[in-house]
Each structure stands twice: as structure tokens, then as C-alpha cells.
Length: 259
Image (cartoon, rainbow, N blue to C red; front, side, top):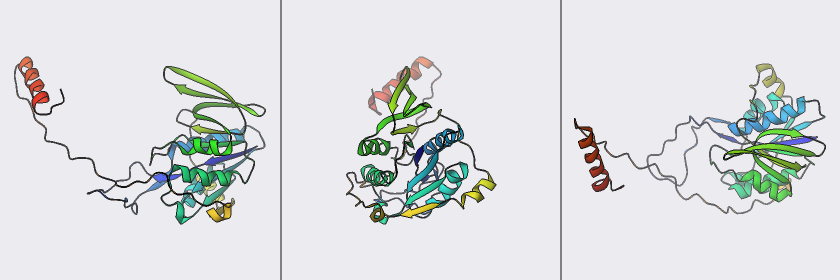
């Protein structure tokens, strides 16, 4: 069995964004970057399948500059992935979901993967469209936000949480699955395994190597702007709770104009 895990390097959620005024592009030079947390569940699930005793090969695939290689090494290869593929192309620096899916699909067509695992969304753009677009482009079955997975002979059974209950989906392979919290508990890489990961194969390619021309973006971000400044807090000073409530209602109605 061949499994591809599509991952993304994203800014750490604790990274401070300095945005004093509206701008067309964020200054990301000081960002601390990590593996997208939801992708860690996809990596762990692939490794668990491999450890179950099957003849499994796991390829971690990502798009980004050379700086993504350290994340692939530490968070993918060091925890059990067998090899990695990095797609590096300046044309993809500001690519939208459709363009990213087009390029990843071209990479996935190079080998007959039985499963494609992804995090259900990335924490930077909060988009969640790339895996679904990949499934459509490759003509594969797709199950999103899974919390449990069992594999059979050419089939799979996935559980996913829905409002008020749980949905159980059966599908044939190959398939694209997106993973979320609750599916497993991602392991941490050990120092010896991080060192051994440097000996695992990591290939770097461009869009031209994949035989694909990056399409024009369907979505363009025109401006980032800081949230409006908070207004002053007005304290209602009243001994009588009923009088305080009446004053609050008056302020909400006449000044805030929210009721």
C-alpha cells in the first residue's frame, strides 16, 4: 500500500502579527513556522497503518520554499514517513486553494497512491478546500473530518462527527481523507530519529518537473487590516440593580444602538 500525506508549513498560532495599518501583504519575515497541527493527525494515522503490519510506504508531500525541509524532516520523516517530496516554485508563493490543489494533484498522479491523507484545514488560511479539490481532480472518493478509520480489502470505513451524532461512511480506495483532532494522538519525534531522518530521501521538484503550469488565482487577497480599536468602557454606577438595568437598556438603545 502507498500512502501520501499532504502537509503544510504554517505560522505558529502564537506568532505575533504586527499590523499597524492596512496593507496588501503581511510581513512574515519574523514568523515562527511549524507543521500545520491538523496535518500531524494525518501523519500519525499513516504511521499507525504502517505499524499495523501492512507493507506500507508513506510519502510526505508539501509545497513551499527550502525552509519547509526542516519541518518535513522533524515532523514527518522522523516519526515514520519513508520519503518526502517538496514542490518549490516562486509562482506558488501566493497561490490560492485551486492552484495548490492543481499542483498537488499533478504530484499525486506520479504514483498509484491507495490513500491520500490531509489535515481537514490549515490554521493560517482556515480554508479547508484543498483536499476536496484534490479528490475531485483525481476522481477519488473523499471523506472529511474523520475521527476513526478501519481499512479492509480495497475498502475503508471512516467515522466522522456530525451535529447531534456520528456518521459512518464506507468507501472504496483509492480515497482522500481529511483528519482532525480525536482521530489519534500525534507522537513527538525523538532526537535519534530526527538524526536518522536526514538519511531518508527527500526530492525537490518544480511545477515544470511535474509537467503542470500553475493556473491563475481565482481568489486574490487585496488587503489585510487591523481590527477596529475598542471603544471606551462605560461603568454604570448604581446601588439599585433595577435602576442599573434601566440605565444599561437606555445606553444600549440610545448610544450603542444595538437594541
